[in-house]
Image (cartoon, rainbow, N blue to C red; front, side, top):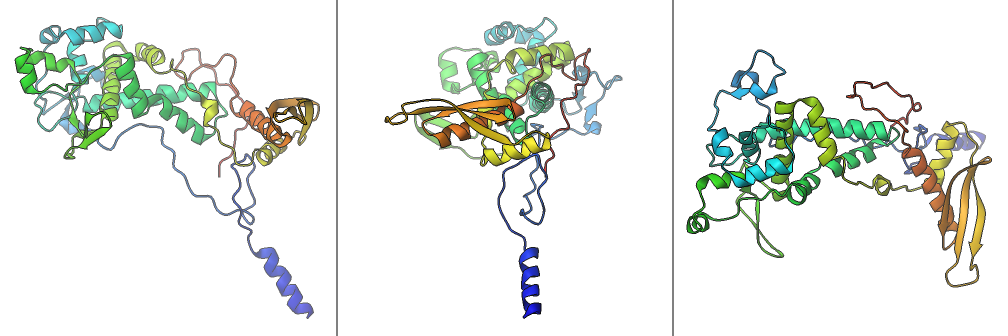
Length: 371
């Protein structure tokens, strides 16, 4: 009987207990937590339709960093600079974006020409790929420098909120006023519109067509088909690449800051904590602080239909955050969430970007180990 009970004891102790725990800065015991699913995070916004051109297909200039003078061997037709200056919408867009005199109007025409099945003119495919990497770099470094404690998943979500397809589509349509070429050839003929004017609007092979409000028609999908948001986003990326090619890195950084990073993004709303109290306790233990305690600060209407409780979350004598709710439990959870957000949304007073000339590394803390 003694041997049986001993075997039973060891079986219970060695069997792993599988529980789903929240992400925390403390590395869990592998015997008590199920192995987490591996997650791959990618900051670069390269699309599968954007293929990289190999060097044998290019005419490479002597200075390989002179991106403006790269040309493809199978180079298609290009709208000349004189013809581009005759397009009213191109002149308007050039002035609206406050582009420099170095930025050629023909480059703006090419940025509005997506890769199409029947197109003999140079498209913006490779420009959009290069512009996507520029946007990804400058937006990511801005977020990491301003919010060095952001978890990797929140950082990815915030990056997508700035330079995702739908965000850049909103920039192109509502901020820059880019229009797409929707008129038929018959309508252009009846209006006596010059053929050159079609290059002043965004042209692409439509994946879907809005027949009328609430009704969407799915066209035949081809290799060059793009949906509405991706086509407008590629135009923005191509214009950013043109700024880099004509004006250099510093002007490109200011351009992205003015038109992309200046948009208001609520990062605090991206957090979702499953067990905020347990996560906060582990975080304080890692930082060698006292465990959290919740104290009632004020209340009103306890016996009424709409009571309000205000509590504070403390670590020792230091108040981490406050919270309020219609019950003590709700106020307690809100104080935990606010304390966690106060930690993760820490922002240095004078943050510098790695691309700045006077950049000096800033040590925040040892970081959060991911597992």
